[in-house]
Image 1 (tube, rainbow, N blue to C red):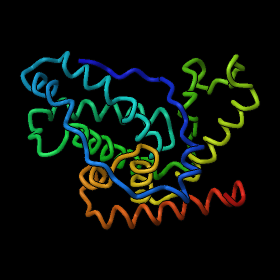
Image 2 (spheres, rainbow, N blue to C red):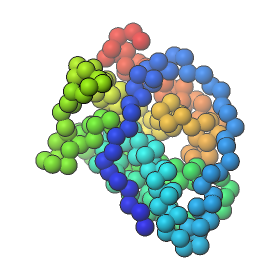
Image 3 (cartoon, one colour):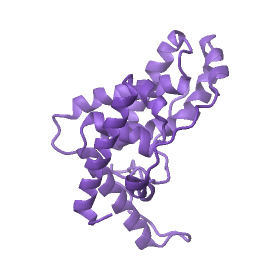
Image 4 (tube, one colour):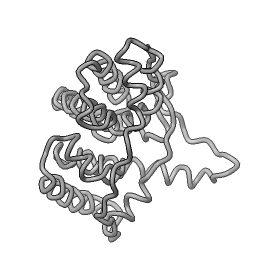
Length: 226
């Protein structure tokens, strides 16, 4: 069975998120057909290599969801590992009542909620940017290194922006944070969020509205008017 590879890099969406705070349009598109079902059926028949394909397809988004909700990269990696194990063990119970990805992301969200409850006793924990995961040597984050494409100052500014945005996301109530992460960062439709969280459409929209206001208020305190 495949094991997810941590760490890896993902392009930051902080600039886009800031722009979307006041301009995000609330239009949804119809969800496409379930592209995973072929591999799900194979896996249900005992083909572990088919599950490896599903892991490869979804591990990146699952890790980003877990990271954005926990604010801690190592915790996020653990959550995703646990979520994949749970999914693998429960795959025979998947009845195709929703898309496989919806079912899978519901599992990672639930595991993340459990981890957040465990983290309540911690007064602080590390907050590395998802673009630059912690260096395994010494447990410290790597310093941004200059590249031929992006100036060092720009890299540092982008990293600092990512950290400040994540700090503000971390101040949101859990129920507001999860909706904002799923909608404004991961780009799920309202229908998908409803199915993932098992809450009504109206609740999704009201929580997202409150989350956006709270996040914007936090960012304004840091950056000034947006």
